Length: 215
Ligand SMILES: Nc1nc2c(ncn2[C@@H]2O[C@H](COP(=O)(O)OP(=O)(O)OP(=O)(O)O)[C@@H](O)[C@H]2O)c(=O)[nH]1
Ligand SMILES: C[C@H](OP(=O)(O)O)C(=O)O
Image (cartoon, rainbow, N blue to C red):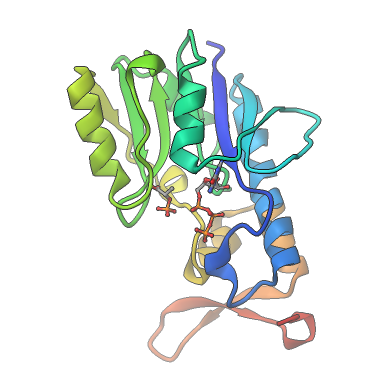
């Protein structure tokens, strides 16, 4: 089955929650690396990709729509354009695989949704996108379930470590370094001097080679 994936993407000053370890230029490069990982899996799954960008951006394998309004307004504008099922997938899910995406688009329910850790929403597949509206931020997973109920949709909640791992905070980088084999995002982190470290309590974190620090 062939579907269209909508990937919201903020190319300019993204991932501000990583400002403690990456400067703006690095955050922009890292966000692009994660986006590459997501696009590669989207295309491998057989879907096409449209980037819903806050600023002008170019990509050889994706269509681009530039919308300067907020994330929800931009997505809701896009959903109104769809006449076929739609996949909304965030650009900060570098561990996603093509098989994960196929699992969503093969759902027999009206909607499939993947929660993000901490209450967010990482991926939504909608068979009737024009009935739905996005309400990201805060406990958006619960909000999206409520909106689906209002639409009368049957819902498939997908339990997936890889798709539920959105990369927002320094601690999240651990997952890329451990599980991100062959990912552009892992290459970026390794070439920027990041590696995993285990603290005195046995917790796993990341450290950066001081010679590669720029802050
Ligand atoms: N089109 C669009 N995409 C956005 C916007 N804000 C964030 N995104 C994208 O939406 C997804 C989830 O966003 P966040 O996790 O909040 O990412 P972020 O805004 O870069 O990160 P923080 O600054 O740390 O909040 C990512 O794919 C972002 O690139 C926006 O205003 N418009
Ligand atoms: C967009 C937002 O992302 P988070 O801030 O949870 O990463 C959400 O999932 O609602």
